[in-house]
Image (cartoon, rainbow, N blue to C red; front, side):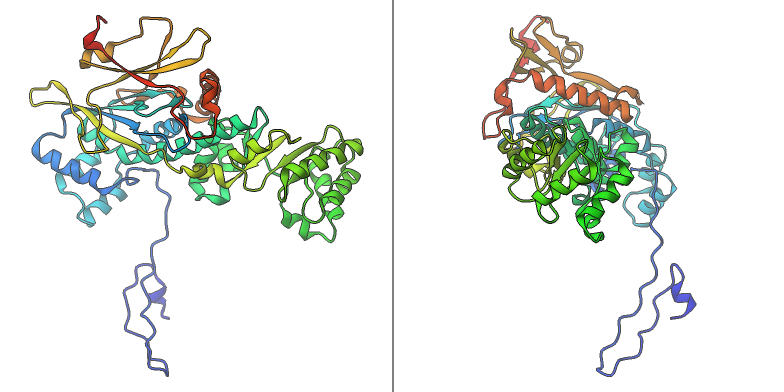
Length: 482
C-alpha cells in the first residue's frame, strides 16, 4: 500500500488485481480521523430536536415561553416506587451543552439545519430555570420530577440529554434501592462495570450509591464522585500461581491480612483452611462467587468460627439481584457484591420517563396549559407543584399533585404541617445550584434517599407485584382558597 493510502483522508484507489479465483479484493477505504473527546455534549441528542428548532425559528414561535415536564406514566412491573437519580449529572452537563466549531461544522456539512439555525446554535446557552424533585427522592406515576422553563428554543434542545440521563440513572438507583432494602442493613457493593459501556459504568456506580450501595469497583466513579472503591483479586490471580496458598500469600503480603481472599477457585473448605493458615485469624473476609451461596455461607461460617476467625466476614457475589439477596436473609452473609443486575436495572433498564410540553405562551404572551390526548399516552396540561402527605406515625400516605391557574401553582406552598413540598430550585436564570453536583451532590442524594425510603410504608419494600406504595391525589387550586 502506498504512503498516500496510509494518510488520513486518502482517497479511494483503483481495485487491486484479481486473485486466481477471479474475486477482486475490496478497495481500501480511506483512513478515518482519530476519535476525539470533545467537551461539548450538544450532539448527544436526536436530530428532530434541531429540525423542530429550525421550523420554530422560521415561524416565530421559537421564543415563546414554555414549561416542559419530566414524568413517567407507570412504574415497571413489581415496583412500588422509583428513585430519582441523574439530576446532578444533568446539571453537570448543562454548561457543556454548547455548539462549538466542530459541532456547527458537522451540522452545516451534513445539511441538518439551515444558516439561521446555525447562527442561533452558535450562541446557545441555557438561561432558563429548572426545578424538580431532589436527587434520591422517590417518585410515582405522574410525579413531575423535573420542570424545565424557558423559551421553546432553549428547552426543547435539552430533551434527549435529560431523558437519556434520568431514565438510565433512575433505573439503576431504583434497582439498587430494592437490593439494599432486601439486604436489611448489610452492605451491598457495586461491581458491574464490565457489564455496561465504559461511561454507563461510571453513571451506574454513582446511581447505585444513591440507591444505598456502600461502594463501587469503578475507579473513575470513585475519583469523579468521591465514592468508596473496593476490589482485591479475581480467579485469574489464583490461577496465575502454582498453588492457592501461593496466591493467598502473595495477596496478604501485598494488601495485609485484612484483605478479602477468594476461596472457591478449587475446593471451598480447603480454601478457607488455607486462607486462615496464611492470613491468620485476623483475616478480613473470604469471598464466595459460585455454588449454593446460602448453604456454603453456613458451612464457611462454622468453619471460620472453629478456626478462631470469628471476626472474618463472608462476602458473596455471583449474579445476585434483589430476589437472591432476599433469599439469603437468614444466611450468615456480611456483604453482597452485585454486578449485572444493578447496572441493567434488574430487569427494568429504563424508567419510561418522558419530557412533555405542558404550558406555552399564546400569541399574546399569556401562558396556556397544553396536553397530549393520544390514547394511552395522555398528559396533564399546565404547570404542576407536588407535595407528600404524612400520617401521624411519620410515614408517607399520599403524593399530592397540585394543578390549577399557572400563577397560583407557581406560588403555592403547603398550608399544613402534614405536607412536605417536593420541588426544589436547581437552575435559576441559567445558573446551576452547586448543592446538587459533584461528590457533594452524590453524598446529599444518598442521604436523602435513605431518609425518604424510611418514610414509606412497609409495603413499599415488598418484591411482589402490587400498587405503588402510596396513591397520587390531585389538588386543584381553583377549587380552593389558597
